[in-house]
Length: 102
Length: 168
Image (cartoon, rainbow over all chains, first blue to last red; front, side, top):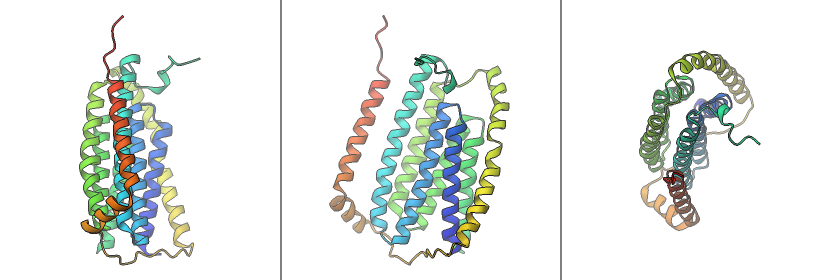
């Protein structure tokens, strides 16, 4: 296995772990959205690597563009939800969201 | 030479991602996320996906950063006394991350290097605009329809979220 291939797979794994770790440990809603975005960047890196290995870069580019569109919509809607939650609760801390407690 | 550039770019990408998670200031965190996008764009260009790189740079590094900065300025996350108290807790929560990443890099790297898997990067002709256009418009029409529906759903969600409510 060439060194470049190894570096890409390990880097993608590290970025994915960073995103998931932040998603689990963070309490701030905006930082959680940033964590989702970071994990998606790792997936984009793996997708383009798969395209390069399979030699079918055109198809992979269409997938990446679809993914970027989804990424933007997720980020915008999640940021809107965060702002809306802040207006109602005066805090972005997810531990303080107790209004929906049963 | 290309290998060295590649490894440096991947390293910078990982460092920017870890910085985006560990930096205390949210604005700096959003800027680090944009930096991750920029490094990813260069990698996409080098791997022969220029159109995806263009989208990544303009949308992920540009638009998403603007969305994050406006969301952060619309909210004031913590008050001063709360922030100093939380800073200590944050450090305690995230201090393990670099060690976990180093451990994973070593273990995963050694495992892959000695696994005997044979993945090579073949020399493929880079994607050109005409072949991409053919694939995108002729083969993946369902994707285009899906993108339109997703964008419309996003617009609808934003309209609902920011609707002015009648004060009772």
